[in-house]
Length: 171
Image 1 (cartoon, rainbow, N blue to C red):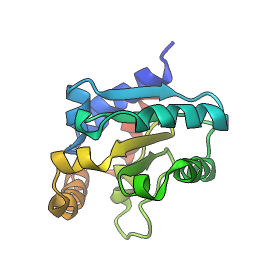
Image 2 (image 1 turned 90 degrees about the vertical axis):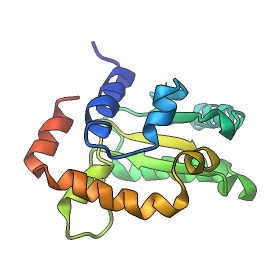
Image 3 (image 1 turned 180 degrees about the horizontal axis):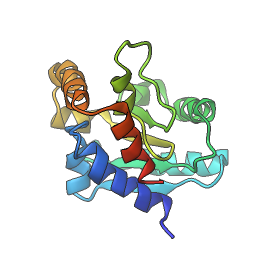
């Protein structure tokens, strides 16, 4: 039986990397500093403990953490978890830490391009914890807009049906 971590690793390798959706994802993955944490319940103390451990790692380590939840976690619930994580931050830490949500029901705001929703769609609900300093070392802030345009270009060669089939293959 595949674990949530196995499913997430396959999604990163065969979806994120293959579609070239996140240029800085290779850094922590290739350096083996991407940490996978399977979250089996919404136990606030467990989430706080894991998050505290993430905060203790130096940004220069290019460390990133994925909190991987089960399919039963709804879109609204993952937003609640993100809100909980934000409550744990001091104002200074809020400037240094970024959360990125991936979810089967992810929608990229109001957009006419349905394909953009697929930049953060995933087979399982995931919250990535990032040190902004580490991201900025990998990708200068001046390139963020280019990344969004590149994502749109990379996805435009695929159909919604094909992307859904890719995502369903990891479940």
